[in-house]
Image (cartoon, rainbow, N blue to C red; front, side, top):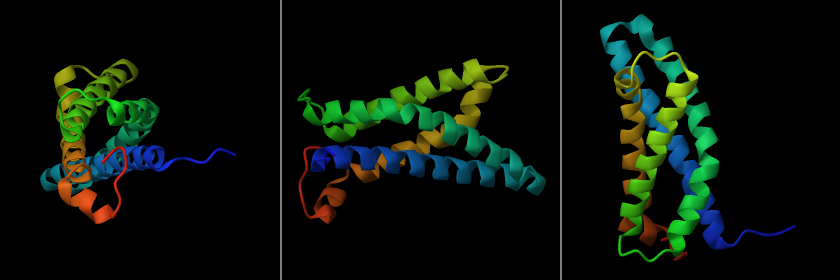
Length: 144
């Protein structure tokens, strides 16, 4: 059985942390938004969160190689900037997938429901790739 090196483990862990926090944050945001108008609309937010989690889980296997490649590229951008760009691109890919799979009348309607997930993902990336986070781990990896 092959063991994962620290860099691969860090990449996989960050991808799943990003997935979890983006989905939790986006769903909580929608839950608050829907419940403020009518408390009975909370199941819509929860169902949206479930769909978002399932669709974005399908994207995670693509995100992990991106983050691994990002760890080894020297393109002159910070890893945080590359992660923000990558997450935005994968967000657009997930939206396109949702647009194809669900009976949605317009891309604008889809964006209004999915922007909280993008915002939560951006905040998670800013936290995951912050200098304070690197100092808290106590060790340096290729992805720090």
